[in-house]
Image (tube, rainbow, N blue to C red):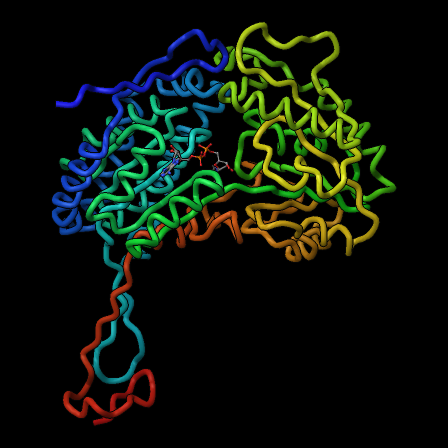
Length: 483
Ligand code: NAD
């Protein structure tokens, strides 16, 4: 028998501290789990929708009661502020309720046409879903998959990231304890375990959230077996200031957090800021002044902290490298730490920074940085702004800031992105009613909203024609089948 392998997780704020460990699943274990899920799925699908809704919502509620320390555990394993971690858990539970509310309407048979015969579009479950999630918001990014998958009658196997496996594993196990056996599983490990999951017999669909490079590997592995995918990938989201923008303290604070929430490690963070040239200096001055009052770096479990560490040493070194490259490329790097404050002595902390004066081709401007360093670029006119905003293949979200919301609405609609916002960015622009997802290399498929639930169904069209026979003839309208 193979020796058990354990995956330890360090605390990014105190890297000498091990927060916990989970058992790693090898290929054989993953395959066995997927076949258990495949065996359990038909029984789950055969239950009435009312039954699935009741069992699932009760299970999620019970799981939150059973895991009172979840926000602290999440905060310690990934460095996100403890208040944010509690918020993530609340948001995930609200999402489960929202999906349960949508399910009866969306999963009901839809009669089509009003002529003779009987035509119905039916939504059927797919089978076993393979869900692979990143480290930065594991609870909510797993719930965007678990809730619709189970409500629609699928079984699901979730693989957390090795950088934040602890809280999500505890939460999924707590939910699963209140559900019929084997319909919800969690497996642990890195790329190998993820690849084994994609390889397992019986996977009907892949729901992946993560970076664009890894997403490409996942997609090509799934394509070999024609397995459909939802791909929620990286973004390089522009935050666009229009020339009528007023840099009030409230607006500036919202803009700054639009980039720096969770130390910049949010897929839909504002990753670059575009400012009209005449407003540039005034905007940067206001940005720096407000930002220097916001950031208190430290232990994310301490309620006084406003920015935690980045997730690991590699992420910290990448941020240091980006700042060095930006200075080498002629950019001005501006520190945003409050005057007199210092970085904590230990931990993977990175000072928040702004960079001005970079060319559009600089790495910091055209790649997803996923950390606390943000470039501000100036533009001359609307045409140049649109060209810069629409530059590149990553298009997850975008925002336009203006004192004229109608103008902002029109301009936001001209930016190529999955989500376009006016006078809001990042979580502030989120709505359960709006499907979320990317365009281009930011991915495809949607989470949240009606579309996010229907991803977990297969369409079956059913028809009893009004007359039988005459199979060689073409029907001439949607409600007519001539003999
Ligand atoms: P990542 O791509 O490195 O890892 C994501 C997951 O894939 C992890 O569970 C990882 O173990 C797994 N994995 C790695 N290699 C694999 C392979 N070969 N086969 C199968 N699975 C494999 O991403 P990350 O660093 O955890 O997260 C950060 C990235 O995720 C950023 O690019 C961010 O923008 C993106 N993200 C996107 C969204 C969205 O909704 N679009 C949300 C959050 C994060």
